[in-house]
Image (cartoon, rainbow over all chains, first blue to last red; front, side):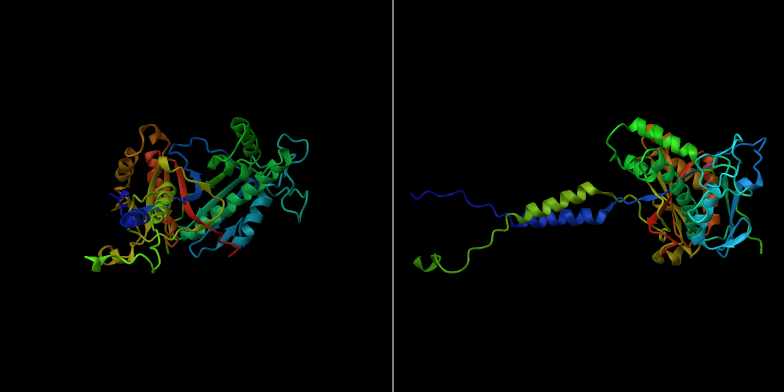
Length: 213
Length: 157
C-alpha cells in the first residue's frame, strides 16, 4: 500500500470568519481620542466676605451674543486675546521692594521687555481673569476664549519651567498624563507644583447675563 | 475508471491562502486592542469645537453628557431645539440630576467620588444651555468637568 499523507484541512473559510469578526469590531468600537479643556467648578456655598480684588488686578473678558470680545472695555479680536492675557498676567506692576514684587515677571511679550505698567496686575498671584458671556454666545466662541486664556497661562508656565528646570511645563504634564514619563514622578510633581504656584490659574466665570432684548 | 484520472502535469499549482486568516487575525487583534466598545448611540449632532490646550480624559471615571440639536433622523419627532443626552436617551434639564446620579452609579465604587463629567457639546449650541448644565452639576457636587474638543485652533485657520 502506498503511504497516504493526512488530508489537508480546508482553511479557506477561516479567513471569512476572521473577516466577519474584524468587521464586527470595526463597527461596534471607537478609537479613543477624547481630549479637552478641564475645569473645576466652584462649589455652591455662601461666600460671606467676598475677597476684594483691585480693579487693576482684574482682567475682564466679555463676550456678547454676536460673539464679539470686549476686553477691559476695549473691543478686541480673538487673535489678540492670548497676547493681551499674557501681558496682563506677566505684568508684575508692584514696585521693587514691596512684598508683592514679582521678580520673575518680564512684563509680557518681546515687544515691551521689562515694562511694568502700574495700571495692570501687581503680580501673577493677584491677577484674576474673569470671563463673562451672554447666554446666547455660541459654545464655539466660548471654548475658543477659554482655549486662548489657558494658552496664555501655559505660555508663561512653559517659560518659567524652561528657565528653572530646562523643560517645558506642558510637555512634562503631557508625558505624565500619558504615562510616558520615566524617572522620579514625585520629584516631577513637586516641580510642577512650583511652576503652578508661580502662575496660578485664576480664571473665574461670572453668571452669564440673561439676554433680555 | 482511467477516464477520470487527473492530469498530473500542466496548470499552475493553487496559491496557498493559508496565511490569509493569520493576517486578518492580526488586524482583528490590533483593532481589539486599540479600540473600545461604543457605549452610547448618538442622538444629537455633535460637531465639537476646536482647542489645542487640552488634557486627556480619564475614561474610567467619566460620565458623558451630550448636547446639541437632535440628529437629522430624529428631528421630525423631537424638533430642532437643542437637547441633552445622557446614556442612550434624551434628558430634560429637570431630569438631569437623576440621570447623572444613575450614570455615576455605573462607575466603579472607588472612582465614584472622583467622577469627571465630560461635556460633548455641539459648537452651535449657545452657552446658556452649558451654564444650566453646569449649575445642575454644582448642585450635585460633581465639580470636575472637561469640555471635550477636537484638535485644532480657532485663531489660525
